[in-house]
Figure (cartoon, rainbow, N blue to C red):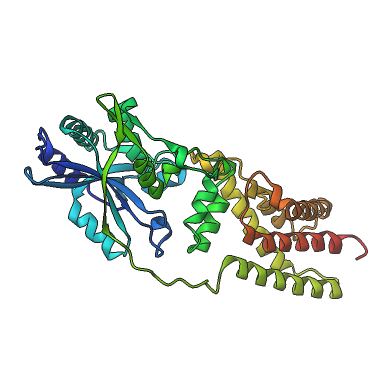
Length: 388
């Protein structure tokens, strides 16, 4: 996804205005592979390419553009009001950038007649105008990949059929996302924590196309009606660049490793506290404050933003926002705090036991951390009791 200025978009649109494609023009769907370097590029990318040697056109139409310089960009991003754009620029520049990152490029030449090409091209031109180029981004339902089949259906309607019968799996959105984040364990953890129950919905075959790889396979299995006959929507597939294998090693500071070490530290501190019958208050204050702040952020993502995928987040069962209040009461030792931590200890125990059967799939690496919360909550209850 590349940032591009509104000025360049306007110039590109004006230059293409009123262009009539020649008989040699071709329109393709371009699919670019994922990258192991950054989380944001882990899912790949999709775009349209319009090539017409007669009119000297070789443009990529990229729905993955955003503008950091827009007013309140980061605030809007946090609220879920992410405005993405359709960017239009030189295809060769686009191609070079993906080859430079060692990301494969596959091109699917669409099986369109002259009038159909013109119709699709006209729509893309219209969509690239400053007043039309922005859209409200959504993780799963309205992104740079979903725009590709959406545009084709918008232009050709029922003449195009995306036959999803080739999909034989019933993966959820979360499972499909996880497949692409295996080399980004911390990114995978962050996304799993931030996204709630809607992410565990089973995706329909059409909805699989929120991922560029499935846009490619979806187009490969799609049909278009020509003179009463269903023909393949893709006439020819070309591998423009095939990525070279890259080595990947299991990171030393994988979340599971780090949280397991944290559990061992918690057990050691808890054993020492039990022997001396005195709580390590600074350790607990840091632990529960961090967890409470995390829960507060998750609650805000659910209730105070339009990030629909962050709603009904079961991670709030361990990241209790109430911990923030509990920590502020540490120095005053109110009687209710003892009962509060008993409830927390029981809740953490039940959560670990029921982990595999919860309706929302929680990240497995969090189990040692949740166990640590339960252990320290129990110690808070036990050592706060009078006479201990």
